[in-house]
Image (cartoon, rainbow, N blue to C red):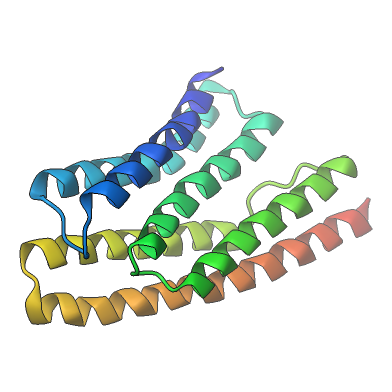
Length: 192
């Protein structure tokens, strides 16, 4: 394992820790400040490692086809984990989680088809936009739990609406990026 792969693997290793902590520490949308701090640290490490692993790979000259596949896999594991945590807590609508899950499974399948054709599909620009939108929605979900815990009342209620809108945008983005990856695969195989 090279340094970039280790950074990528950290997202996979932290995912079950986030899920366990969130589902055991957040009750009725409320958690202790210590639990919230730990969740924020894990969330930031997972999201920042998504940016850092690519930088490390390019700087150390260790960009590999395996890394191009492992990175989006680790992204899926991390983001599906925190969205699942929010769904279990009743914050995220199940239909949004299913769209995100189906999108990730669909894109993985498209990448496997591409590999079978001898093509390594790197992340599309739509995938980068999706990562940003998912990170914002993930942060919004965690911020909502923080607001419920620390201030409650009207502030949390208003932010709850904003969080739901961010989740709906995630669902729409999942559909859009699935279509984009499918079209990209088609363009790549037609050139071959």
